[in-house]
Image (cartoon, rainbow, N blue to C red):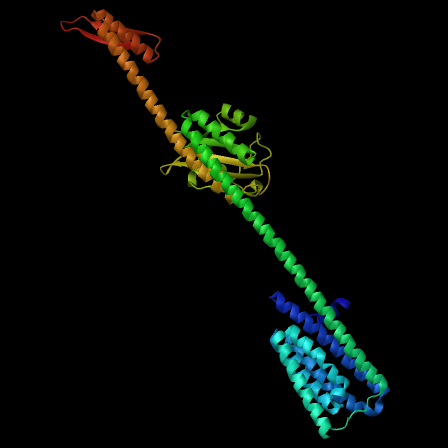
Amino acid sequence: MLDRLKEFVAPPPYEDARDQRTANLLNTLAWVTLLMALLSTIVGVVVARPTIINLFLRTLPIILCLVATLWAIRTYRLRLASFIFVYPLWIVLLLLSFIGGGIRSPTFNSLVIIIMIASFVLGGQYGIQVTILTIFVGGLMVMAEYQGWLPASQFATPPFVYWLAVAAGLITVTTLFSLFIRNFEQSMEQVHESNQKLRQIQQQQEYRIQERTRALQLAADVSRQLSTILNQPDLIGAVVHQVQIAFNYYHVHIYLLDDAQQSLIMAGGTGTAGQTLLKNRHAVPVGHGLVGTAAQSRQPVLVPDVFADARWQSNPLLPETRAEAAVPILIGGQLSGILDVQQNVRDGLSQSDVDLLQLIASQVAIGLQNAHSYEVARSQAAYERRINAIERKIQQAHTIEEVLAVAATELGQVLNARQASVLLNAMPVAKSQIEVR
C-alpha cells in the first residue's frame, strides 16, 4: 500500500538530470502546498463555519493551480508546470491580498515563497522579474490604501486560521529550503562523481599513453635486436622472451608455416611448456584453433575469454590460459608464421595488445626475412668456396688418376656419401663415370 502511494505521488522519470531535479522540486512543493490548502480548508470549516464560502474562495484557486501543476509534470510539460506554479499562483495570491487587506495581509507575505520558487525552477531572471512585479503591485496597493480605493477586508480571519496560515507559510519555506539543500547536495555529489570519472578517464588515458610508449619502445628494441641476430632460432627465442617479460604475458610462442603451407610448426616459446612443445615439434593445421584461424584469414584473432569461443583448443601444458591473441606474421603479404600470446586472466588481452603484437609481428617478419636472406647468402658463399677449393685441387693434380680421385673424394664429402668411385670405360674414346653411394 505504501509503495503504491509513493509511486502515485512520485514524479515521472526525466532523461535530463536537471529536469529531474526541477520535477522533483515542483512535485514536492505542489503536493505539500496542496495538502496544506486542503488541511486549511478542513480546519477552517470546523473552526470558522460562518466563513466557509470565503475559505473556499481563498483555497479553491490555489488548489486548481496546484492540480494543474501536477498534471503538467506528469505529462512531461515541465516548463509549463513551472509557469503554472509561479504566475497563476502569484496572481491568485495578489488578488487574495488585495481583498484581504493589502500588503498587511498574510497572503501578501507569502509572495516571497513564489519569488524563491521562480528563481529555483525558472531561473534567476524570472525571480527578479517576479520580485519587481511584486514590489510594483505592492506599491499600487499602498497608494490605493492612502487614497481610500482599497476595499475593506472581505474576510474575517479568526486567530486560529491566521495562525494556521502563518504555519503553512513557514512549512512551505522550510520545505523549500530543505529541497534546495538536498538538490545542492545532490549537485555536489554529481560534481564529485563527475570529477572522479574525469580522474579515472585521465588515469586511463595516461595508462594508455604509457602502454603505447612501452609498445613503441619495445618495438624499437626488438627492431634493434633483430638487426643484430641473423640466426633464425636465436631471433625467435629472443622475441618471445622479450615480449613476455616486457608485458608479463602468461605465455608467448611463434609458429612458422611449413613448406607445404598446410601446418604451423612451433618454432619458439617461453618457459618449460614452450621448450616441451618445441621439442615435440608441436604443429597446428591451418584453419584449426585460434592460431590456425589467424593463419587462414591473415587477420588477428582476439579472444578475451577462451572458454566462450568454440574455436579455442586447450593445451594441457598451458592449463591457466584464459585469454589468447594470435597475430599473423606477414612478409610481402605472404604468411610466414603466427605470433601467439596467452594470458591467465579473463579479459586480460584487449585490442591495444593486438595493436602492439601487430607492430612487433611486422618487425619479426623483417627479421625472419633478413635471417633467411643471410642463410641463403651464407650457403651460397660456402658452396662457392667449396667449388673453388675443388678447382684448385684439380688444377694441382698431375695425372688423370689424381684428378679423378680428387673429384670422387670431394664430391663424396659434399654429398655426404659413404663411398665414391670412378668408373672408366675401356673404349677407343675414353669415357669416365663417377659413382657416388
